[in-house]
Amino acid sequence: MISVEKITELTGHSNPIFTAELSQKPGILFTGGNDKGVVEWSLKNNAFIKVMFPVPASVYAILCPSGFPYLFAGLRTGDIVVFDFIQQKVIKLLKHHVKPIFDIKFASSKNELLAASEDGTISIWNINTLELIHTVKISDDTIRCISISPDEKQVAFGCRDNLVRVYDLEDYTPIKALAGHSMAVFSLQYAPNGEYLVSGSRDAQVKLWDARSFELLQNIPAHLFAVNNIAFHPTQPYFATASMDKSIKLWGADDFKLYKVISREKGFASHFLSINKVVWNGDQLISVSDDKKIIIWDIKFH
Image (cartoon, rainbow, N blue to C red; front, side):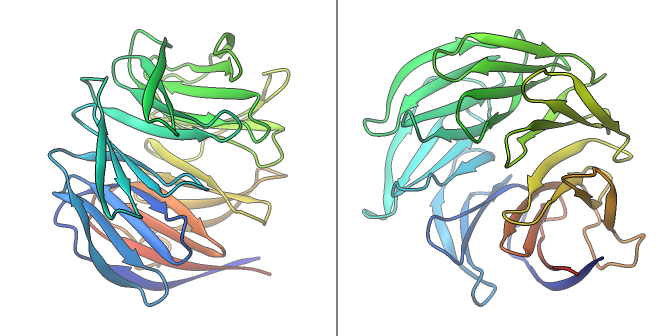
């Protein structure tokens, strides 16, 4: 049994919100979108704090790597903004790509930052020096998302050519291309136990792949439209999917069954446009949408 209660909605963005990320500091959320800046919110009293810094273009990705006083924001221009929490200012623009950055992830074992771009390459940055180490050509088309396996042995890229490409994180050599989706792959997440990889696509399907054999374990016709994001609960065996169909669904991470649908159709005062990202903050699920709203849900597992 799962019960869902809407706690609050946070408003203030004047345009669609594309991404959200918890701060390294508990109780703080950052959001970005088709707005003039990255916004900081308090999750302790569910309130707007401030606009962190202005941006010249849409923000598609935010990363707050554990153990470092930085926030990285990937922009539509291809730049990555580096904000330093200690100095409370933008200290650098990581300039390399000229096409949008769609995802940024951190490989802590290597102190490397990985950025995925519409140009089909990933750029790899040293987080200590903030210098470019190298770039890897992954696809002839857009890379939409990145997921790093829990043991940091593998990294997977979701691509616009419908493929999930798995690479060795040590030397960035290709291991396997997973074919199955009929449209662009928008979301990817390794299970917390590292046993399988979940992919979500514009084709509205969720696919579960064995992380060792790369066999397709299961295909779930999960949504009516694109699956924009996948997020595993930090401690409970569930994951959430967020979709362009304006719904959030909660699935069992061990049995892959559908346990809950959060949508207006199901009687929840939920989003009325595409849901672009979901983030777990303990048992609270935070969702952001094209409708410019941030909604905080309390999820109880009985």
